[in-house]
Image 1 (cartoon, rainbow, N blue to C red):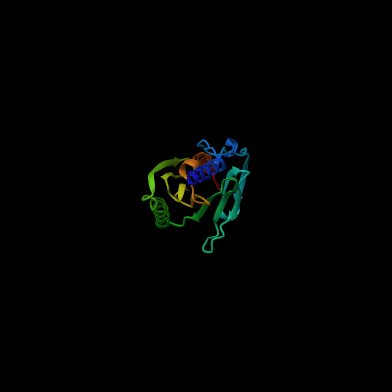
Image 2: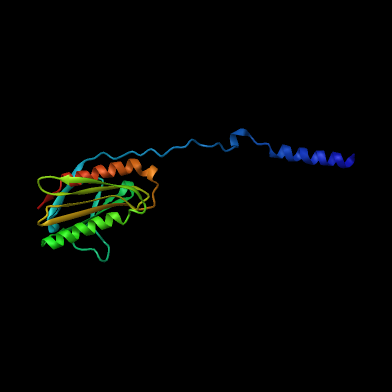
Length: 194
């Protein structure tokens, strides 16, 4: 009997010690994503005189020469610092038809090397009085989500590719990606060959 009372006392002490105030218990949170407040778009003209072109972008971006060791003179980065993304621009002066075809082929290969990871690649054709090209949208878990090239087929060729500075989740970056694609389209719509 004495042994049984010790066991009951031990169990009651354990039960009393395990009771906590309900306010201290962790409660699961609702699923959701962080709200993103986009900065106001105030367009600013960027003129790259040594590269013979200009464009407009929002004032919250930074345009800097590409610091990659093998970068050429007219390779620039547009830094979307509020969103942790970079648009890499590479400009080439077209000397002849063979060089143009090589640039077009290289651009297409750079997009389609992501075909194994992409759910789909959408080609949007660009055709204006000054130039033509393709805007690529890559859906899925690819390293880049959007790329484009534009050319006048005689003198100028500009290629752009958008990368986020860290590994991303497609669902969580969807609103930011939509916003940045609009900025890329703004660049293309305001592009002028100097």
